Amino acid sequence: MSLDLTTARDWLAVAVEEARLGLAEGGIPIGGALVAADGTVLGRGHNRRVQDDDPSMHGETSAFRNAGRQRTYAGTTMVTTLSPCWYCSGLVRQFGISRVVVGEATTFFGGHEWLADNGVEVLVLEDPECIGLMTDFIAARPELWFEDIGEDPA
Amino acid sequence: MSLDLTTARDWLAVAVEEARLGLAEGGIPIGGALVAADGTVLGRGHNRRVQDDDPSMHGETSAFRNAGRQRTYAGTTMVTTLSPCWYCSGLVRQFGISRVVVGEATTFFGGHEWLADNGVEVLVLEDPECIGLMTDFIAARPELWFEDIGEDPA
Image (cartoon, rainbow over all chains, first blue to last red; front, side, top):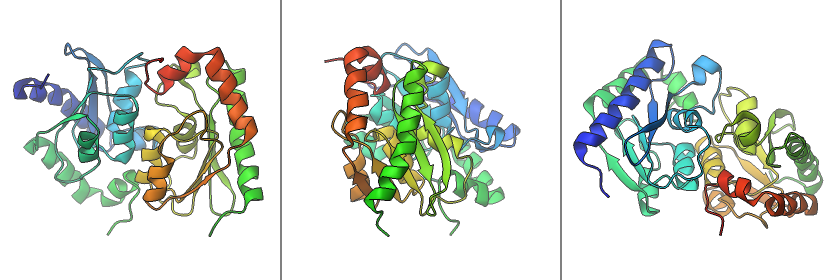
């Protein structure tokens, strides 16, 4: 079943709240939430590279981890403020997460089209608040951003 | 530079040691190690789903995490006892890890060919000890294994 835009935006607000928490902690402002088919938030989280000195905790993996062990991800939605990188896209594909709601794919274009090609329902909102968060962050801390995606600063 | 088989097997032994540690802890016997170009083990780890109640810690992500923050992964090798799932394959691709040494791809076939298609050097050893570890584990704990890869038991 396709998601209506109002619900998608409500869910995105949870991920944005996480991104803002991360920013307030001095971290990279990317947040995520794993949401069940009935709208229950199973887990929410944000990038923790700086806070925990942990490169494995992106917004999506943090939300996934905080949801704990689940027998199935059928019907779940991964909500993320930013297009999922290959690492987080691989997470979605491997665990059979049914849908991805992407806050924006303007400042970074990850694997969401690959996911769509592999049967995941993808909704890209191009939310101005999400775009603003990352635009400001990349301008302020480019070295930290490029470290987080394993790229050399251009 | 291609890796010689003796070195690859030496590195795999570290991952196998990790897998056996995980098994002894009651966990899923998959281990990994992230190795620098000069052979230094930057991080090693094993699947921690059971031990930490953490679905995000596969053998490879655990090794990656334990290596801590790195500015670049150029020249590094991810060594894993088992073909990397999409989640762990995405990790390798996103962070530009140069090479993957796979203990075996017999009991599970993940994304290593996708990685090879995307410029990662891939070496599959089909190591009998690795095959034996997973064959025995899947027979003993099928429900746990299928949970770990997000699949329904057939």
